[in-house]
Length: 115
Image 1 (cartoon, rainbow, N blue to C red):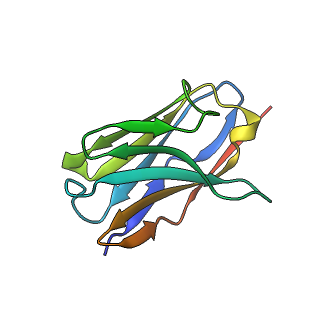
Image 2: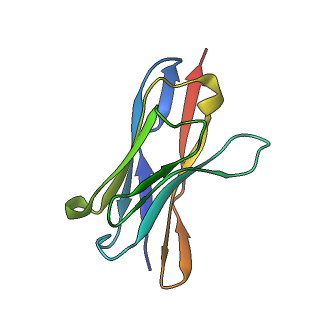
């Protein structure tokens, strides 16, 4: 089992930055892929970014060049650095991973970007 705890959300003005953290309850060294998703009100949950154990990354087109995902295996933590935030980035952001065929989600952290 893996527990994921997100932090770092908040209210920020457009153009500002936030860094989200996702702390896992066990070592992430053996976890192949971890990801950040987001869900805005009335919309489906969407993939924002993912990172493999080899640090290969993938980004949604809407955040490419503005967001950076990274992982610190020593701290069992994955980060999402969000720069040049836009009002349309407003959503609940969720950490996600798979282990032994089971999918795990964090509780989410709210990000609100004001115009």
